[in-house]
Image (cartoon, rainbow, N blue to C red; front, side):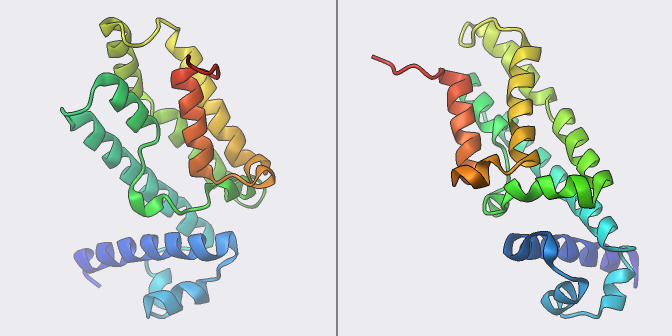
Amino acid sequence: MDGEAQQQLKLRIYEATIEEFREKGFKFTMDDMARRLGVSKKTIYQVVRDKESLFFDTATYIYEQIKRSEQAVMDDDRLTTVEKIKAILIAMPDSYSELDWRQIYQLENSYPRIFARVRVMMEQQWDNTIELLKRGIAEGVIRNIPIPVIKTMFEATLEKYMETTVLIDAGLTFDEAVQYTLDVLMDGISCKE
């Protein structure tokens, strides 16, 4: 298999992993993957070592797609600074919106290396947001609250959503909870009169 063919297979495998996760959570098998892709398990194992590597590589792939979505927000000159902040805090490709991110907490025990990677990726995705927050403060459209406070509030909340069953217990989807979190962060909890 040449380099281009292997790269294309990798992308197909990552997308299939996302689909399997969407349907079955972490309980899907490599046989499920092979059926979905219409290839043998041997072919899959030419690209990934094992299921843990598959999850690790797919998490990295998702992170890269999210960064592309963020960049699209940054490049959109039609949006105000506040609109960009709101969009970038929830930036995610549409195809990932149906993923049940509430299940990420299961990684901590089963795949701690992947769970650690997800946490690092969450911490690294703040450069554009920090730039926008600074711009918003300079423009006077965002209160001058220390950025580490804003970052910690949002990041800690997302981590809690992914590390526990709090959303499942409350009957909320991850997207709903993130939107509520963003609303509270940007607008507070008081009713406007």
